[in-house]
Length: 337
Image 1 (cartoon, rainbow, N blue to C red):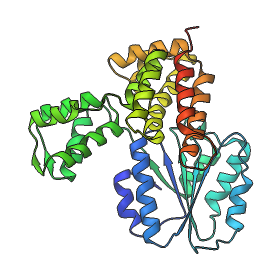
Image 2: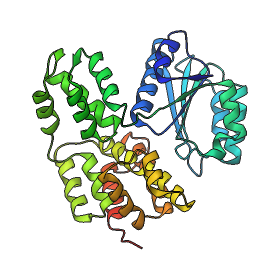
Image 3: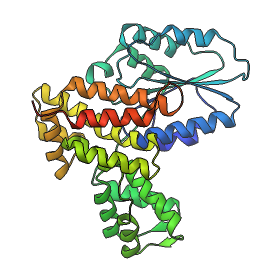
């Protein structure tokens, strides 16, 4: 069964289903869906949550072992299974097919997948998930619909503004829903409910910190190692968390992988960038990055961000900020081939 993000919360009030599958690269939609399921789980007595990230060395026997183990602290459990590359492998495919038809006792499972390639969409394991679980597609918002999306978010907090200001906001965030949501939330903190004038919105949006994580992504794409180091130091000095920096980097690098794959297949590069929601001046930046970075390097960078996420959350030993700095500097200093 397929659900939209809007249908998810009303659905959750009826009780958690055994398996939810989140499919897509949109980070804000993923975060909000995860939060909605987690809140519903807590409300419904799921007092234990376990997160597993599928990497090259992942042991799929863990899933079966989890189902057979007995919790000492809770009768109902939530298991989150993140597959960042969308490729579970042979053993994983078998495990997912089995999980779809034979759910784990007293457990609800969230399977987190990126936007899938054609082979994965047509695979037996994904067909099994589609047939037996609740699948939520994490939809992106295209440039033409972004002003309306921002208007809806403002309305939820009792605010509204002119169409010209909505278009200004959409242009400022360049299609990034995380950034758009951050700006909307900032307006709710700065101003009361009601109409927001063009002037106050522009002042709030343009009055930003000297450094922000999206500038870091641009410096990395441009291959500007000196600026990359300067922004990294500035972000640390301003007290940004490693997670706040890592998520925008993921948002920058994931589309690059899809575009690089399309380029290697001989697809039209401009069309591939448009499909990945890369517009205007950003296209020149991405083209420059593609001449420097190989698919292997981009895949390795995404995998490294998964490890950094675990460091930031205390699941893996290591200094998350140090590893982010090494990764960004390493990518920025790669020269054109």
